[in-house]
Length: 400
Image (cartoon, rainbow, N blue to C red; front, side):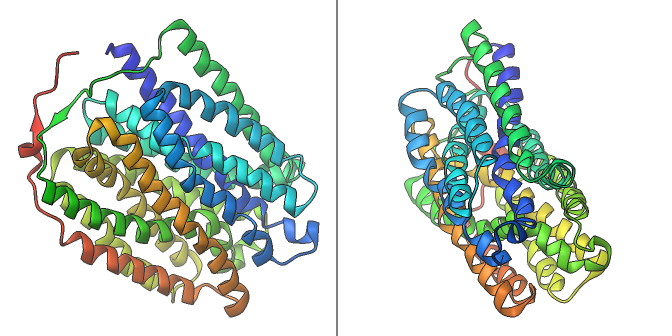
């Protein structure tokens, strides 16, 4: 593996991570104006997104299988082109049903990134934690940017352009990616840049049982935060937002911008300290913050949401490093696929649940209490993971 391949892998994996979140989360802000367009409630319009969100998870299994059996690089090309086209098509929809179909295909193509793109990045990374942290910055930028991009384009040009413009940029990025592939500057590699000692079968079973429970609980928190944050902030600081889609987008972007720092810091910590400590610390912070947010309001509520998202995002680098540590490179894409089936597929129902709970309670207090419970369960589960010093797990890297 050459340094140029590693650099381009880092760059395009980051760009893809940005688009995988940006394009799938545009709807969370656009939906604020759609009830008046189609004469339905917010809960009903939010609810049609669940299948697209679910496909972001369930589509990961076939994507991971194809990444392992066919080509990680080839699947990344499909990601860029397919997601870009599906997003533009959604901008041309004329009914809630057509929007739901568009969101389905956005989720289907976007599902390629996490099982394939993360495994592709890890295979080419010499310092996995740092690489995952940097990559996480791009993902956080996509999550935060989705709200402000969608809010600005909706206010300036209409909700359709909130899909058309970002979708076109993703498509053009795909053409650039394929150009590098055609030149041979980006290609599939076989061996990992860093090797680790093999874990015992018992530790592998125990770790994955715990990690997948935490993935489910953390996914419930992340899905709610990512898809409902504009509405959360509109209600939590209604005096300032005053129904403005752009203001809700600006606040959401600010909240997720803070999490970019957490992504990088947690990645660096994952390279230096036991993964169990870094992973558990993220949930040790989340639980009290979410529970306190249930009774807060105004600027304090916004600050607590920033801490919640930062802690949740900060759990991802050690989580992915744990999976990379205990999963063989031969089936790593499939393990990451399973992660996103659980973390994005099964947890997609929380969006529908949140919509119904909001319509019923006319607020988010009960929803935040539920999310705080998920954080507490995660913290208890992580405490049961086996302890392993970071330096004891590393084996010398193979020759390039």
